[in-house]
Image (cartoon, rainbow, N blue to C red; front, side, top):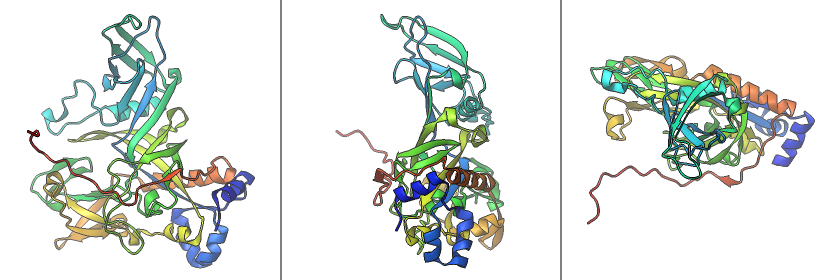
Amino acid sequence: MKSYEEINRKIAAGDAVVMTAAEVAGYVERKGLEAAAREIDVVTTATFGPMCSSGCFLNFGHSSPRIRMTEAWIQDVPAYAGVAAVDLFIGATQLRHGDPANMNYPGEFAYGGGHVMEDLVSGRELQLFALSYGTDDYPRREVRTYFTINDLNQAIMVNPRNCYQNYNVAVNLSDKTVYSYMGTLLPQARNATYSSAGQLSPLLNDPHYDVIGIGTAIWLAGARGHVYAEGTQHCAIADRNDYGVPSEGAGTMALTADMKQMIPEYVRGVSLRGYGVSLALGVGVPIPVLSPAHLQRACIRDSDIMAPVVDYADDYPENSGRILKHVSYAELKGGGFELNGKEVAAASISSYNKALKIAHRLADEIRRGDFLLAAPLGSLPRESRNRPLKIREAAQ
């Protein structure tokens, strides 16, 4: 058994042995689990793809005279002003003011909250327009100005739900094209889309949440951040295989980090035709090898991970819960799978190559002693379930 303190001492001394989740399974096969567990200190995991449940808090400082912002727009994208006087929150899926959305179906959704976040991290100049009703202590009623991220006191990414443990494979069994957050789905299951790094994905390498928990240090788009809570819709109760891998979405994480430390390559606004806007985000999570069991769970392969295939023309929008079948990530990354007697071409809306690049970047930072691990302050829930929204009349 190893401890976090022992591993961090090795990291600080530049002696830590670090491998990515893509490398470690083959190494363990050659070396043997017990011997490899004594040698390897950290396994790095990562993912890069659309994560709609993301956003950021921005603090603008006080103007002279002061203003208590009650309505605000950044590059014409509405920001939430229901916090303190010059704090704003902007969400990844917020549409730009005046966007026709799906009134002109399918909408193009050229710019929104995710693009604002990309522009911020890229250092671009943005316009702030804010209004107020005016008070004795905050008399200003309007402000229009231009700023970059360096003009802000704080720019803090605060994401309620990132890094789904597993996720759907989307198909469309209807006779018309379906536009979804999983991309464009052609009629009669002529294509399928998925969004996961598979064997590299963080929570698939710690399926029972043994080492990833509240307070775990993470690499969020290049910045050192941490898990601040269970993610929304975290649902630990799920059917799992012998490796502990769930057959559905299951666990999620809530993440935060300083946007001023982020790398533009890993914060990208996304336009999803016919659906809306989002944010593609890069996340890396180190898995400490505290015991052979932890290492064994980090040796998961794409062939061991099964994802549910769901019809996004009917079953997903109706929330029926029906699953057409399960397919492995080895099949998905191989280009397709069989459904109802025919081959369906599969493509990812996330980037495995970027995820692998993140896993290597994080591994290099740990080897250099630039990224220490943090023991969780608390565990992610292991018994939680999701509740559906029940449509009901007011209580009499």
